[in-house]
Length: 155
Image 1 (tube, rainbow, N blue to C red):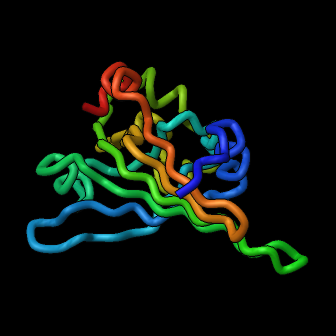
Image 2: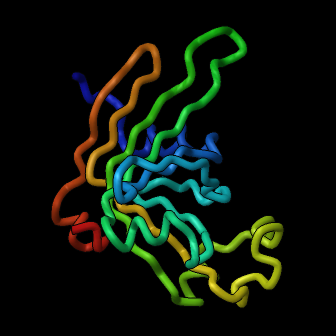
């Protein structure tokens, strides 16, 4: 598999994709649900998602923080396939209001009506360990440096 795309190029492509499929390891199966990154897409290997603490995904992360994210962009108007991206990473749960503020966008009030003061809100940070991509012309894998993963709390 060739690796010709840089992280900056991948970030630019991911910047156009809002939703992903967020996969956790349930007690007896992989559990998948759509999640929005809320426009927080300056991608550097970390993805950010808001949730309520009392959810299956949070319980799954507490049991096993290994998660995968899959992103898909639609084909271009000229028919070129969109990009497919798979991220394997580690999730951590953040209960810090300063962290909430850093990643908050007003549109989130649809789901969290009291903003960052909504009871039971949690921020999920997924730090990538590996990223694989396919876009019809190029495919590759980016392995995140272990030192970066450690510094980001992924391992």
